[in-house]
Amino acid sequence: MPVITMYATRTCPHCQRALAYLKDHEVDNVRIVFVDQDELAADEFHRKGFTGVSAFATPDDQWQGFDPARLAKVLSLQSPMGS
Image 1 (cartoon, rainbow, N blue to C red):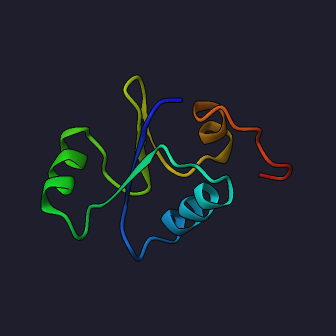
Image 2: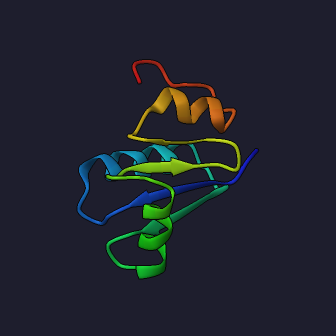
């Protein structure tokens, strides 16, 4: 499974949903960076062209927005019903 980087802020409701999803699925190959608290992470976030959180990056792909089906596919998870 690839390591996935999640760019978030502490106050973003979409980020909170994504973090809950990752916790519920016991995903441990994720690097969570809070761009509102880490200047280097914020620089990395902007260099990748992101304009808002939540945003995700793997070695082969990157996207903006919490998408449970896409995360499940990238992380080789079985997508839960209703997500």
